[in-house]
Length: 186
View 1: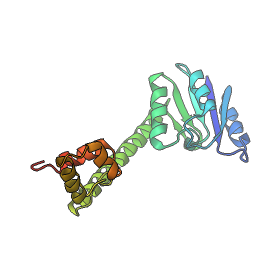
View 2: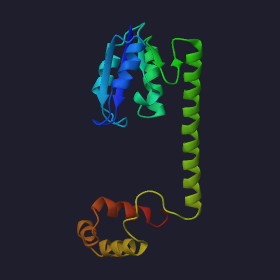
View 3: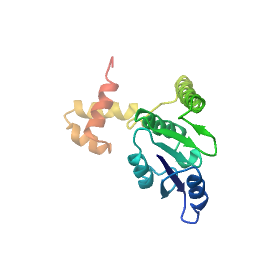
């Protein structure tokens, strides 16, 4: 059985074009959502996916109606494939029930994986370059070296760590981490 899914982003948009296309493609049931594509909760999509069983085909008008992102789209279609459910996108002419459609889908998946790997590589390279320039990565340092020396002198002089931390407007755990990080030989 063919099961259709249609989505528009706002109430101002109309589902008629998608419904006609899905009906024309032979969809018996059509589930809809009127929600942004970036929304993680889409009740119509959840219902459509729940209705699909082995041998069924989920049909959409265009790929961007189904997935929030390319990786989300690939995940959804892979989950359908594991359940022996086909997928058809009418506008892009992708049909995973055919060898050619599966090839196109796998190429899309490979490109998405490649893109993710490039992003990770660029991010790592940027972090390394920033470190080489002396840029501190992560959270800002709460206490300067002078403040840590002052805190150590106060504590060595008998002041309680809690009182010293309060006077520096940091928590005791932040003070302890700073003392440990700037300890002689540490």
